[in-house]
Image (cartoon, rainbow, N blue to C red; front, side, top):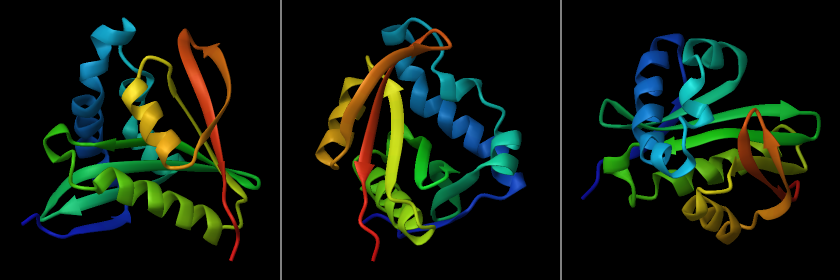
Length: 154
């Protein structure tokens, strides 16, 4: 049986461990998209300082990360990542559910996100979770697919 997962706000001391997690989670996509994915380029010390970052903890190890940024009445899901050896345990689903709960609690009416158009398995996960494609665009040299989900306030 898997150890319980708890979520908490990331602390500045978590930045290095979060960066390693993100690198492990996104490395498999390098060959597919032909370059290092954008989340691997971020400075996580700055991200933890500037954005709302939450970590999923299993035992004493960070096994997932969620980066959010409120944009008025919309929550931008900047990044969600799970350690590859922890996939299939529901950690990503838990982080996505928390994202929507947090967005609702802060008065947001929708969550938006984007991903690389070649990360097809992630796109399918988002679709199954109720996200709908809004458009596609190339930004910073990345072919991105944008999605949005309306959330109901309590």
